[in-house]
Image 1 (cartoon, rainbow, N blue to C red):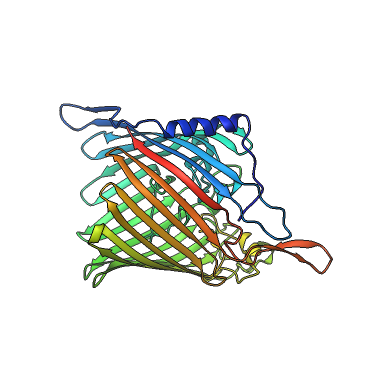
Image 2: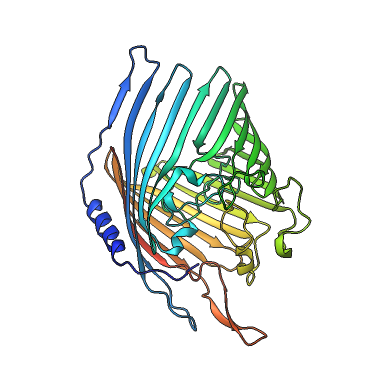
Length: 442
């Protein structure tokens, strides 16, 4: 939803100008450094990645409400990537970033998020350093991933900061519990890492059992049981289909869930979901009532289904998605719903959603992608279109836009004579967005 934004002035203008200039710079792909010892047991590969994006936001006019100023955003995210071997069974990876961004507050909802603006209780702030904060401009250095992995015959042990994904669906992803991307995020290349320990056991050729422990932190960055997570996930393959069960504790809730992915004739099928039980105070016992007596004191169900159809013509594909969130609000209750999300929840306000996606190669180096996300209850939605141009093996340029629709907010007079903003649809106040992004690797 739209909020007040800051205009670009002073240093913010420098950020925008710098990013625009870099967008026009040529990209030359090359590794920074590679090394391997004579025995081949130890190695180091250093590479880099750069994301440059500029964009424009235009907010819709809303009757009776002060119009939001048109705004812009820009970001430069530079990454140094290190990976290699420390022995025959021990490997490592590091992903260090420099994020210099000018984002409006709307960017914090995930559509425009960069690594520096990502919020999750599963990352300690001691591995990130904010060196610049002026209005909507921020600069941050930090560690996105840094972990060791020990691989034995049937057991992998990973410890450090690394991405943890327990989801199989693409758009709504209710089983993605740790630093999930927003459904409308414009860049999903690097999933943020979380501070975790994972044991992966393979009892058979087609089965795995994962024990995942993730450290959680409170507002003062002190680790605590209430914000931490401990999950068990088991997968196996039957009839060319992967089946999975999971369960355990997350920040402020407990979950039991499952997923499935396979094929039905020409269609690819992916489905997942879970039942959640609130534990807001983190004492390990289920809540009788949520804080403030909010109606989030009962078990909730989150589920999603994806169907995909690949088409040989121009390497095309089409897909359909459905998402269900039982603790979502009905129209008119969105503001209260926004106050009772769990940590790392998908920020969707209603109960029923539908999505469509499609992609095709116009020419081998130019791909078109489109997606539509609809709130079925109020019929508002978002349409996203991207053109992805491959500049070289190490670089690509993305030009895209997002178009929202839906009933716009309005001022309603309450019983005490005070006026308040009433949301008549979820996406009616979302801005129109146009952006250009380049990504290259060196």
